[in-house]
Image (cartoon, rainbow, N blue to C red; front, top):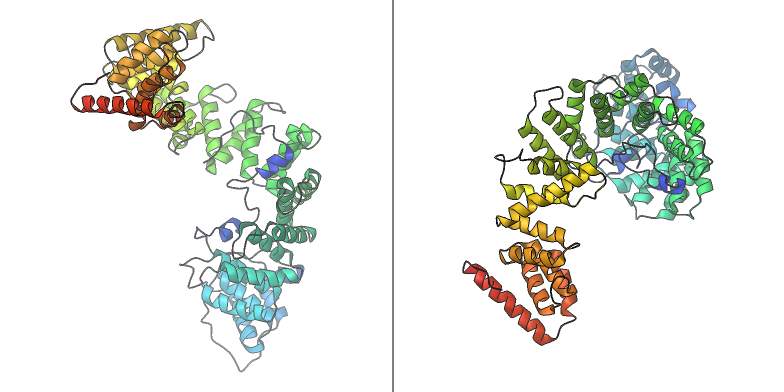
Length: 576
């Protein structure tokens, strides 16, 4: 679930923690398809080769691969690699594919086999053929062609059951990476470090993971530098070392790693683990955002919106938050939707705000989703950008309480206010309103308006309790515990005898404490037993505690009283 941070883009964590906690959708793997390749429970797309050395740069990869049916011409020698390189540069991939096919088949050089495997994998000059690519890459790898070993290993990590007959094989990938890593290949060292860190294809080994990541980082592998900074920050496979974590994240950031730039900005902005320098932090955030790192784009948009360390700029706020929203980032959608609704920095535009907020609200449970539902409910209730619709507003307020998983939050309080003013009468039964009014009654007296709403909520509960509404009796009794435990016990007993589970639990607690009633462990055990049978886990735990304070005869007496209660309830009445 996405964590929303609508107020501040950076929280005051130590640098060690912020790197350690830098996981998430973008944070676990830092390069290309690494996350997909190492996720055992997913079926990622087939791997695309990584950029190679300068000697191979003329035939740089683009996309994925397949089969070849071009005719052979054995009467003439195969084209030379210089001709093939020239054809690649000219974009004549049909000639490249045919030439590499003959080179691989007739000359059998590992380099040609590797190149041909890549062309098949990428689908250059013809359709992709993953099975054939696997064959030729295996032949090249068997001749110790390092680049072929790395590319083949990545194919085994990213393959799925539908990947053209190539089966996913992390164990084989680890063998190939290990062979290439031992010969100093930084990409292989990086991937091998990730495999050891996650226990994919090999037994998990944090020390080995750290060792290989450090080796890759020292070759200049940028993603490895970022992962190494995380290892030092977390103390994984090595001792925790904030200074070294800082050094390596700066190395990765300077090399253009967007996520490293984002978390470096994070540290500089907060001054945790580094000397605070908000101007420098903004520079790194800008670099990361311009480089396309989504979290940086959202954080930058929020800064421009709120004037956080920079002058407010509606245009830039709209630009960066708009990019984040277009990319599907829920936080960007929420922040932008609320800004368009409020009209404080951006021009108010409820019509543009609504679809953004609706998408967030439909994305499941969470604080951000609850805020979106609450905003939409407010629009429906007040007729903002639409006709007022109280029923729709109530539906959305209730949705917000479910998403927030609490009845006393802002949406629950608003529902409570609607209930005590009679606006929900006829829309639902009073017992459904009780949790919201009870939440409103529990609010502290922060100002005159809150005090008025607080007392009106208590009056509403009392009226409903006197009308024998069981949930209202329980809620009123719980509210009275702090101020008048004797009256609280009276209301709780009425609700408890009528079968209200939480009232039974709270009444049992009063008997333990001797608050509002005479202390009586037998009665306490009885009511806790009854509440536990009604599904109260808290009552079950408390019953075990009180049982330790009782004699066996007392426990037996309490159990008999509980059985009598159940028998009476089954017969249609309750007995004390």
